[in-house]
Amino acid sequence: MAGRLIYLIGPSGSGKDSLLDAARSRLAERGCRIVRRVITRSAEAVGEAAQGVSPEQFAALLAQGAFALSWQANGLSYGIPREIDDWLAAGEDVLVNGSRAHLAQTRERYPGMGVLLLTVDHTLLRQRLIARGRESLEDIEDRLARNARFTAQMIAGNDAGLYVLDNSGALEDTVEHLLSVLLKIQCGRGLAPDGGGTVA
Ligand SMILES: Nc1ncnc2c1ncn2[C@@H]1O[C@H](COP(=O)(O)OP(=O)(O)O)[C@@H](O)[C@H]1O
Ligand SMILES: O=P(O)(O)OC[C@H]1O[C@H](OP(=O)(O)OP(=O)(O)O)[C@H](O)[C@@H]1O
Image 1 (cartoon, helix red, strand yellow):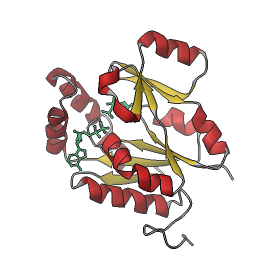
Image 2: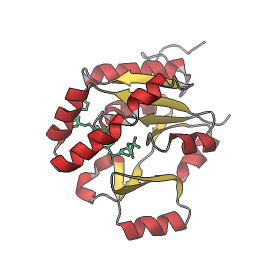
Image 3: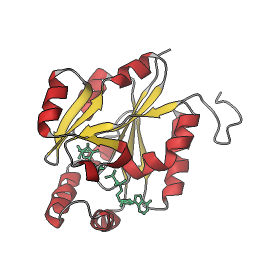
Image 4: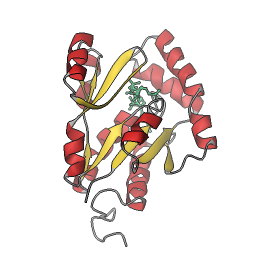
């Protein structure tokens, strides 16, 4: 049986990368893979969760058909490697750090996907973006302005198959919530949180 794409979205700074990092080993135990994104961001600023490339390298990869999904936002280009289609075909579930603006196009390609929306209190979001120190204050304001267009509208839209995870509290709590939502939507091998049983 084909695997399921799980599309994790949320404002820049809501904690998508932190959550995927913190849940990495437990997701692997459940047979759920996390894909490494390709981003036109400097290599120092991408870390384990992404590969930094130049705009020219990105364009070449795109032209070669290296990406299953790609989009532009925040002045950057983002690509999701095509290998996710091999994983899905092999029955593995795949978690992708995605874009809210690209949701409709992603759903067209993966109609059965699950969508997880990570939220965080607005004041905390600003504080966390500033504390992360990756962008300039001007870029942070642009990212906060971009958010205003999305989150409320998505929740109010009661989008089918959308699960909301709030990350305003401790990251460990959000990890537990993520794993319980994945169980609910029967992502991965259906192992219970203690590794014991299976989902009915
Ligand atoms: N639950 C949390 N509590 C406190 N700080 C957090 C929490 N989740 C993430 N952070 C911090 O917030 C900042 C943004 O998180 P990050 O994972 O980079 O977000 P995103 O990938 O969505 O842009 C990082 O500095 C991270 O360490
Ligand atoms: O359409 P949006 O939902 O606004 O998303 C646009 C992009 O911004 C985020 O990446 P970003 O470079 O900000 O990385 P981050 O999430 O690690 O901050 C997100 O992961 C998307 O790739």
